[in-house]
Image (cartoon, rainbow, N blue to C red; front, top):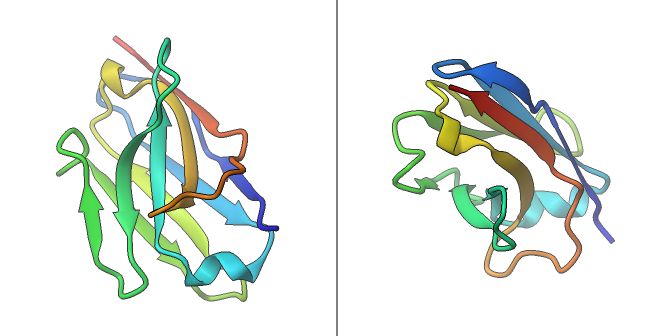
Length: 118
């Protein structure tokens, strides 16, 4: 079973930047279309923020377009998934998770917390 470990979150001011990383424990994750999801405070649902397919094509939520970039590093057996975030806003605050898409794995990582202060 693939486990996903998110990292890179933190506290930043409005307008700041962060780069999140997702390191899977198995190269099996390499073959999946992948995405970053966000769970905002008070909400149980996770919204899809950005996704990347095996062919490298990407999609973004409207709120992320122009500010976030999803990418993957395939230099090693295990591909690390990244989310570069610029011009962060308070509404970007939340716990960020990586997972497969359509459908995501039933098991989720712990996520990485992003807090954007106003």
